[in-house]
View 1 (cartoon, rainbow, N blue to C red):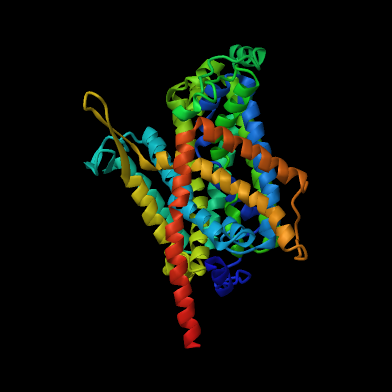
View 2 (cartoon, rainbow, N blue to C red):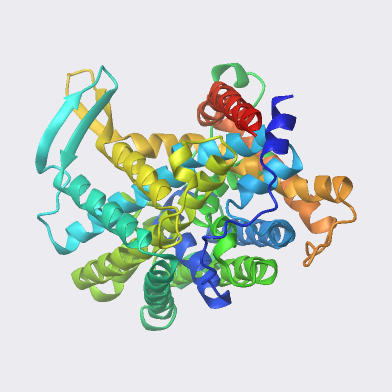
Length: 521
């Protein structure tokens, strides 16, 4: 009943008149490309090769990621053309199922998915800037860690401070209007795309290592050094075996399913252009095209980058790259210590552009939720520049909190080490993010049944086969994660379900407010 009442009070098919339609096809494609390319592609190859155990496994993982991501983007195009409003995926889920499902997605996005990613990218920016300027150190404290119980702490290091400055600066620039935001995105995305192209050219043509090529391509499918993958909970260990990529069909399915966590996360954020649909000049065409073009560009670059790693480094060196920095190891093999500095500079540019796209787009979801009276009312207003300035500020504040919060762990000797809370949270929500993608792709089928006569300027490519294949493949990955990464999947569901009482409170408040307004009229 609450869902029905809420939808009736807040009809969705209405653009906010204050939005500035300034994003063209090129700008939208740059938002997609820039939001997708962060630091993951430079790192996750190490973990993928440890799981799959072969050069062929590394490339096949990325090809599978590419097929999943591109098929999802092509299906999303129909939804984006159908609902060209601020909020993107939040709106699609709300319209296909109910405001509750839209809220649970928006809640998880604001709490962890978008903000946690921005925090991680910001700290990555500071970490690699620290390679160029060693004074930006994680162990030089402005505020020493303060324990908040046995497992949490808060601190402010120089590295954290630089990460916070980055987020505050980008947030401020984006409050000045979407035209400035898209200009920053275009410049930094162009620069980091060229940097990634440079890495590919250097790895494949300049630094090609004949010993590495013989090792990787001479044993293309030979499983070597694959780590065992155990069921994620003790009660599953009697039902499912510990496997490796060499354990036959089940081992391959599990290895490739678990390895998708890193690659899918690195290829995520392709849907962010949908959040900004109200600012796209021709949303019914360009949102879908931007998703498709941007995703194809990034996946092509990712596959070529991993091919470059295989040309420059033997498999064992990829698996055991220091701190998993495979791209740095590749450039170090080509140029020596100067290579590490080159890679650090490229990642600094990449992470800045990535966060600009994420910060720009993420605030639009909070805005859309507030318009449905499901978030802080102030975030549902536009500033004089036609952007949700208050939503940008709220988002910034929460990101800063995530950067400041630390996990705390003491070993048997009493030595305390500190981790990053956002890192744990991001691990936990990978399952939820993929689950919401499955629900969203399924909404193409739901909406065709619910609204068969509505004009669809763009229809999902390969419908119904392509969307259905995505749903099946992603569901298999979810099942693998549930059994073999049970803790992260479980916590992921907990974070989503925590949104239920929050939804109840906000929807009830929204209904009461709507009733008061109705009485006044």
